[in-house]
Image 1 (cartoon, one colour):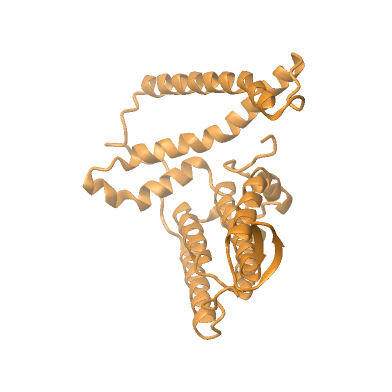
Image 2 (image 1 turned 60 degrees about the vertical axis):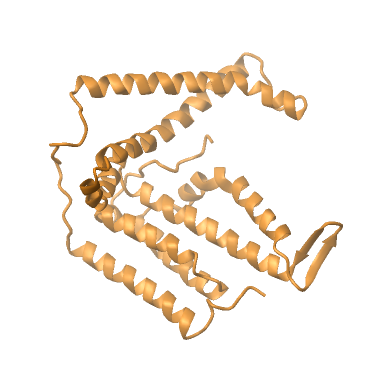
Amino acid sequence: MRDMTIGQFYSTDSVIHRLDPRVKIMITLLYVISLFFIRSIYIYGFAILILAVYIKLSNVPVRYILKGSKGLATFILIMVIIQLLTVKGTTNIVELGFFKISTTGVYSAIYLFLKLVLMIIGSSIMTYTTTPTALSDGLEKLMSWMNKFRIPVHEMMMITTIALRFIPVLVEELDRIIKVQTARGIDFKEGSFFRRIRKYIPIIIPLFVSALRRSNELALAMDARCYHGGEGRTKMKPLEYERRDYIAYILLVSYLLVIIILKRILHLGILQAV
């Protein structure tokens, strides 16, 4: 949690930083969707290559990205183990009582691992290269058609922006509370499992109180500045596509076409994991 950087903006100058937020949202969305249609290690290699080029163009250090994703390593490991033990196949590699590991399960676990890692890293690049305000403006612009159905798009995006801004704040607050409780003599590594769980109550309660206090202060500040929703509001920096944005869209379409060609001509993606 102390090393989590997901949701934080990495301030630097790069081609990706200068792209329109709508372009980066579409790149991330379509890249993640494309991962669900990949069933070949070769096409995963192509997807990894594209992501590596994207990271290189963003000027965000790889170490910084891995540091921010480290907190999700346990979740990924659990999902991979479940996939490894639950997917059945015709040929078993290991048999330990009720647990059987098949070749199909191994392939499925590898594909799931690659998919989760690429999804997390690919999505985090969008937040590293886009400020929460710009991300909110881009989402609001893309979803502006929903206003015709009286869906409060602006309010939804405001909630998203606030949530993204509060991630690093709450992580920092959590770290401070843990240090305070440790200084008071609480050892979170001693005792049985249930005793260690009970020791986290002095952390969870102050964290919730702090979050509620911050949200109340934020609501008062917004009310004092006469915020009444998105109706009639204007933008200081209206979003407009530039040449580099159209080039990015062309490259995105090219990536999707290559995925389709690899699946249909080479027949790599439509083969089942056996």
